[in-house]
Length: 276
Image 1 (cartoon, rainbow, N blue to C red):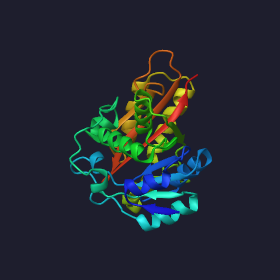
Image 2 (cartoon, rainbow, N blue to C red; image 1 turned 90 degrees about the vertical axis):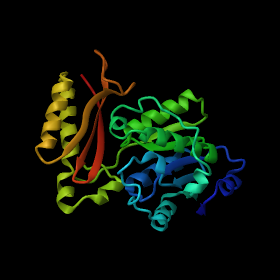
Image 3 (cartoon, helix red, strand yellow; image 1 turned 60 degrees about the vertical axis):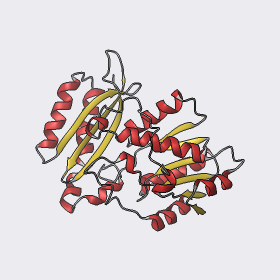
Image 4 (cartoon, helix red, strand yellow; image 1 turned 180 degrees about the horizontal axis):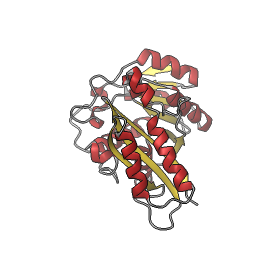
């Protein structure tokens, strides 16, 4: 496996390659990331993974400064998972001058975007820059960041990029908690409480699968259940998978999404559901 730090090095290694499979990350990797690498390896070669903590997608007061940088350990895991090239640029390589061309993606101000202004603009900007550097045929993102996946698929389609966006299923701990790099911020007591987020989403999914259609009431009950146990809830929302907007009558392919703070840690999760 090769570790490179500049776009020039990367392009030299990828010159002439037509089947590149790409997994962008911010590092501090867990099993969920490695499953994405394995999915990429089944789609194309060589497999490239980027490690870059992108300042544009962090807002004021967020955890950019303390986000773990674990490059050496990440590289060991990526090699074992079948990655061929790790691209680990620094900020100066990614943004050699003030970033004046930025992309405002659709639904940037919905759901997580309503609570993290500018976040998805930062995500879209860095991913499109990485796409230009890597020039992949396939790019792999996890369903845990469901809104991010939706936005990047939409942008890829709107901009006619010759890239297939592949989705990896959310990887969970045995108690249901979605794996996340930020889970490491949780105290022991918070980690014991954290699976409640998955549990309240599962309750909504069960109600919808059983014919429940009062989505507002289901959302409200879930918020109450979390708040009663000390969570600060940003949102719990039932949306249509096809549009990520509130479902219209007759739409049966839905996704239930939530974001909530447990202590100082913001957790997100989602579950897809087909209504009856």
